[in-house]
Length: 331
Picture 1 (cartoon, rainbow, N blue to C red):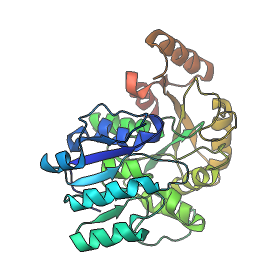
Picture 2: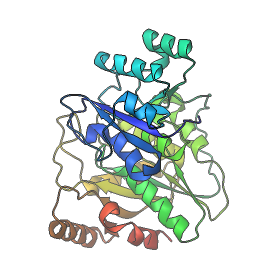
Picture 3: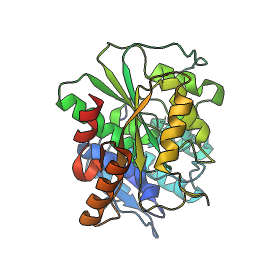
Picture 4: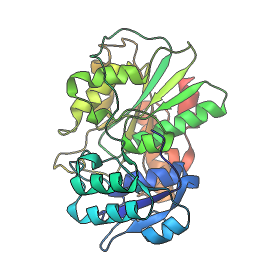
């Protein structure tokens, strides 16, 4: 997919910042690709960029209308359809990371065809995959895993790739979700692959590489999340990680969108090693990445220090501190 920039990021009526994580991820990692944001009444998220209407964005040179919000089930609300059509009529292509395909929505698809615009369903991989083989591949791999959804797995992976490249280490970020694909320009949305082939898709995502090359794979969900554990396990088996980093938000008590207590770091480390040994007997935890955005600086530094001491592992907040200590241990 070659999606044209700049983007107009459409947040609709996203209920909070986490619901707009697709848009926020693009702003954080590709700010040069963002013309502005468009929000509807009642939207609880703000990306901190220019507020533009579709007409204003088109005049400013925007090329693609990006659905920058997510919701349980990945459904495009009916109330958003007219805005998508308006964007097409204004001359913009449309990109969506929703489970439901733009191309399957009759009104939107007909408008795109009539106007000669392109629809990008980035969550739906193009091509076919084989079932996983379990064959050990050359090169090295790191996977970010989580105590829950939306705890920084993508940001941590991007930060680790950037730090490795800064140190002259050959590395690639491997996107496994719609936001990562929009940021990096390539990848496979693992949660949209038929379950029998998800681990095989993860193998295809991180193929044989040079001995010193690191593939840094964006994790999805959590092995302990009742909705998404299957996706997390497929990634774990398919990527065959040599190393993993646990991502955690210290002040979260229940898992996202379900009434289940958040998993503990101890349990995530133990379960990831136990299950990961199926395809890589030498899998190991190399650090803990913490999202402390809800904490004051002093409190954040305290909890990071305590966590690192408790587990005898490098611990950090990738946004506040960078991931240098984790990469030190990795190398």
